[in-house]
Image 1 (cartoon, rainbow, N blue to C red):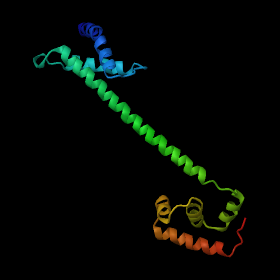
Image 2 (image 1 turned 45 degrees about the horizontal axis):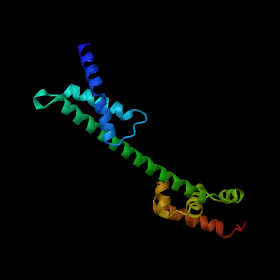
Image 3 (image 1 turned 135 degrees about the vertical axis):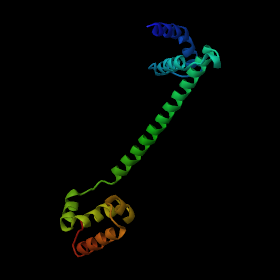
Image 4 (image 1 turned 120 degrees about the vertical axis):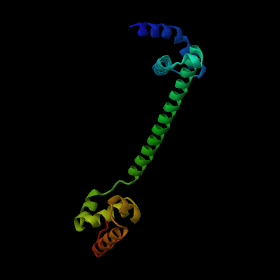
Length: 164
């Protein structure tokens, strides 16, 4: 109980210091996350301070300042990752929008004429415009297997009148 009262007194004395570092680092702390990080740093400083190595006031100032900088770095890394992910999703969405099948009944007819593997070749190579290597990687088979699917699919579709 004595430890809690002592720490509460330190918190009251150090709140201004936390706000000082937040302002000094030009942090906009809407949610109070940075203030909470400063309090956590204050608690860590309270637990780890060694009086032989220096004054407590300088130590807590250093701990708070560095904790806030670490939080800024974490937030910026997180934001960068989110931006990369969003950009990737936008490009994936654009890619998917381009690859719509216009006449679904016609493609169903083509599919009915082929085996599953031959249809995979038609879908990836013709509709999705993927290379044989990409198709092999996606289907987890060898490149030769995909070439074989294509060879047999072309044979089956060659003699048919597939014009729309």
